Length: 317
Image 1 (cartoon, helix red, strand yellow):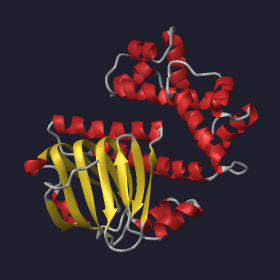
Image 2 (tube, rainbow, N blue to C red):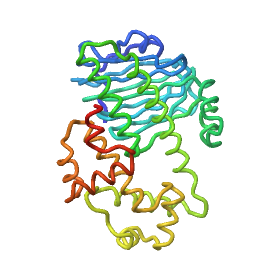
Image 3 (cartoon, rainbow, N blue to C red):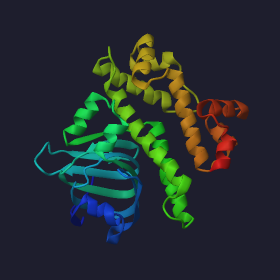
Image 4 (cartoon, rainbow, N blue to C red):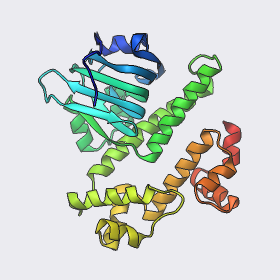
């Protein structure tokens, strides 16, 4: 939990915090806050820091954006303070969030080593980009107090990480934040991240014919399936561990995760492979770490998933 007794309080609108990039420094630790306007109505923000003590901000959301965020390291809290559905939310590493809190007053708290990415979209632009947004999500956003959080799917986390690493490489080269094809690539990745967050919300809430308990069991089955990406458990093992009949397990994966059991395993395995390749890990080591004894089998699986050989992907980076 956070200790707040010695945390300084800075009362300011969110637009001022993100406008001057002043959220990461000062006496509480070192850090950088980067904001890039990818196009009118879409901004990318990354906060990286290593706080020696927890830090808090009293904030007023005058930004009025829909935010898609992913926490890659550290922890944060957000507490609403304006007497409308007052609640406290905590976002730990590995979690993602969709939020929209126009004119809300609250307090944010951060601690430890931080690495968080935010894609911020103007609601009017979002309505044009996603005209078929799930009704339940549209209802949450329109409520003006939307704060939906959950475990980030592997592909969403990998996308966020690749965006953060790209910004880090740009800074290390001493270049401007983004330009040319780098900006175009980042625009595409920002939209991918937002779409993955929306898709995840829809999957978690749309499972016809399944009870809430069965949905929880299906999520547990997914966690068990992806716990070790070197070797998948059998469907019979997953069924026995979760107490779900085999046919319901298979059907549930199709409904909730839009893939077969082994299809999901292979997809997440290749997403992890792409993440490791992006971290400059040799192709042979990635293949071995993910359980492949034959490098050509790994290359074929990677090409089937992404349309490019792993060695070719590394040459592009």
